[in-house]
Amino acid sequence: MTIALRRPAPEATAGDPVAVARALVPVLAPLAASDDRGGRFAHASLAAIREAGLAGLTVPAARGGGGAGLTVAAAVIGTLAEADPAASLVLAMQFVQHASLARTGRVEGPDGIVARLQRAALREGALVNALRVEPALGSPSRGGLPETVARATPDGWRVSGRKIYSTGAPVLAAGLVWARTDEAEPRVGFVAVPMAAPGVRIEETWDHLGLRASGSHDVVLDDVAVPGDHALDLRPPAEWGGPDPVTTAWLTTLLGGLYDGVARAAQAWLCGHLVERRPANLGAPLASLPRIQEAVGENARRLAVNRRLLRGVAAETDAGEPPSASEGGLVKLTVTENAIAVVQDAVALVGNPGLSRRNPLERHLRDVLCARIHTPQGDAVRLAAGRAALGA
Image 1: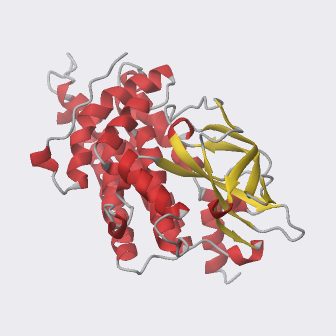
Image 2 (image 1 turned 180 degrees about the vertical axis):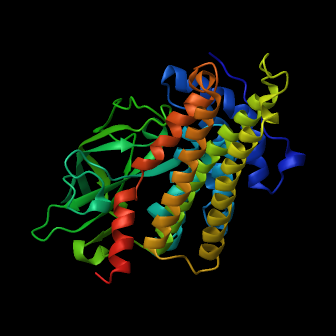
């Protein structure tokens, strides 16, 4: 099937990535519905996003990129997520990784691996993501050494292992693979592995309740040869320490913004349904009932709180004063639980139509529930906050 992609109108979007994202919404929404139903990866949505030039948004301006901070990046992700949260998740990871590479990347010349990844994002819309989670390790945020091994060779490294939940796997140009070295005292860190390299294999294992088009498959690395400079940051495990507040702020704000976007889409559908639905025994739209107005108002309250929290964290981070990693986790938890409540209450309010596959609300419900599995998870966030409050 050939899909005609419409470019955002230049006169409406020039120099404004949020306007670009807004113009993409009517393009992505039908694609998201179709990909979700078929369990297909969001190839067409991501092609439109890349064609619109958003892949390089957080590449530094000094390297020719958009140089966007968290405020702009979060607004773009939240806007796109109203239409296609699966594709938006892939782009959110791109934003996080390039912002991190720009901030913590090694000092290197124009031919270094970080510079090459940045150029590829700008010229080709090339996408990257960190491949961290493993079958035995689970999420690295819980601690432990990865089973994926980077073995030093005279020519560079040989990388072997299996990564699961590798979001965007079918379209990634490179995976930033979390691995340990085979040294007597192992170091741990990221190795940039080209996804087209011999020995890289994608196993299509992603068959999920929500975000079905995110392509979060397994990636198998079988003795993959990479050059020496592709080891981005290898350190003794103890030197990694706790979560970095800036990285946490980027990750939690973009994820929070994504699921808030899903909730806003659900609220918009709900309001349209309530205005149009006129039961025969009422003789007026459901929207005229005070109890309905109160319920919709409660959802509006949750979304207003989300908006303030997300904008506040983004502005503070852009100003060089990010919240602590613990507080960033609390914001993500609050925003995503609000988003889940918005969609669940919308379903409860409309009854059977809310769970009908001919309406988008059931998809929004499945997608928003995925918020609970993204790092940091709720139990870890509450535990860290409780220990801090108790002085433990």
